[in-house]
Image (cartoon, rainbow, N blue to C red; front, side, top):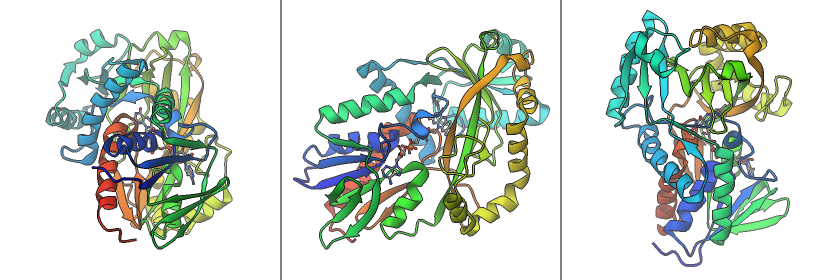
Length: 406
Ligand SMILES: Cc1cc2nc3c(=O)[nH]c(=O)nc-3n(C[C@H](O)[C@H](O)[C@H](O)COP(=O)(O)OP(=O)(O)OC[C@H]3O[C@@H](n4cnc5c(N)ncnc54)[C@H](O)[C@@H]3O)c2cc1C
């Protein structure tokens, strides 16, 4: 499709925004394309603060956007890394059932993995020890396709590719306001206005606020869930070959604290999922009155609280008590000790919650006036980013080709 000298802008230089820009550039080389990122460098939020896992697609309901885009996205991410010299490893992972009650859920995961085209295999107690000698469990699902990569490095590489292709990647430039003209949108930033015919909002932790600037009622609120990590000592790290995960709670979009040997060789334990008091609340003490007031004004926040207060309270207790964190890790690797856990980093998940207090599970794209808004892009969105970018670009270009309704 050739749209001539039309102008498009992507808000957010996280991996989803950058991948969207790559897909728009590829599908429509004449588009005048700008990426606006408020931080001084790309990938400073979720993209640069995660587990770095290339998810294979075990968990996702067959037919969901997550399942489809994860499978396609992983293959394309591996190809992108190969082309651009970004290191990744296809190390495989184990999902370990440690209690009888988890065995039916492990079986459901096996069925899902097979339905999603993976070569997953159930291992018994002895076979799982051959893969991970220090792990313990009743049974485990081995998924050979899983891998690890540094998504921050991927994002910086995407930025370099975009710049080489003539895309304006404008860092340190936040979207502050939007004016709607008859034929275009005027995006107000601290460094001058940007006129655009179409905008894609990939604002991550702020995506709902960005959507509101376009006059859209997003119907969801972004709730920040901090994921805290411990860094394993060399002795602790020696007990983990690759990726060791628990069987997740199927009612929650989080995978449970796990052990990850990253692409740089270090091993992280985590992340938990603690309700944060600020959208960019990377530390326990971070508190933003504005973010809290905003959350309190949204009815879905309270409904979520009523439904999940027990889980939320446990997450806070475990966050404050390293002994509790260790106990959960010891279900996977019993010989880990308190001395194996050193301070690690954290990341904050942007989780969309609807008015009924339900946590959105799938990726969520909503059309607005001359715009498209990515309102839920949780894990595995980093893995799936290139496929998500193509999906968004397809929808955006369809809208741009059609008479605009904004
Ligand atoms: C703890 C944790 C572990 C995870 N583990 C994995 C994993 O192992 N594998 C996996 O595939 N996924 C994982 N994820 C999920 C993955 O990191 C995210 O799904 C993905 O990074 C989302 O990318 P994004 O571009 O949507 O968001 P972000 O990376 O958050 O990018 C959004 C960008 O928008 C910018 N922005 C916001 N508002 C404005 C504005 N007004 N103007 C300009 N710019 C703005 C922000 O500064 C930010 O850079 C994990 C996430 C977390 C938090």
